[in-house]
Length: 177
Image (tube, rainbow, N blue to C red; front, side, top):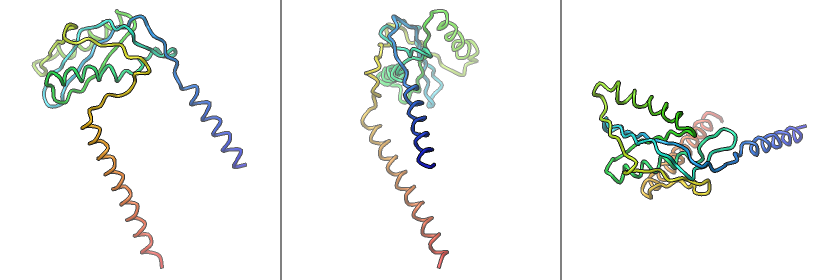
C-alpha cells in the first residue's frame, strides 16, 4: 500500500513538472521600460519606452522569458554610471497602448505626485537600450565578488544550522539516563 502511494505521488509530481515547463516563442517586438532606485538616496531612474526585438515570451501566459536579465542590463548600465546599489525592475507589454498605461502609472506616482520626495532622472533610449535575451542565454550575470560573498554567507548559515541541531541533540541526550 505504501509503495503504491509513493508510486502515485511520483507519477503525479512528474506529470505536474512536465506540464509546468513553458514553451517559448520569439515575438517580433515588444515594448519595455525600466525603473530603478537605490535605498541609499531618493533618486529614481526611469528609461524611455523602448521597442525590443529578439525577445521571447511563454506560449501560455505571455510572460517575458528571462525577465530578470533585462533588469540586470539596466542594473549593469547604472553601475557603470556610478550608481552604487540600484534596485531595478523592467515592465513590458506586447502592445504599445498597454505599456503606455503602465508608464503613465509610474509617471503619476514618481513625477506628478512627487512633492519633492524624489529626484527623477530620465534615461533616454540613446543612453541605454535593452537587448533581446534568448532562453539559452538565461545565465544570471553576477560579479565574482558578490557571488563569493553569497557563497560565504550561505556556508556560514549552514554551519550555524548544524551547530544548533547538534546543541539540541546534546541537550536531549543530557535529559535521558
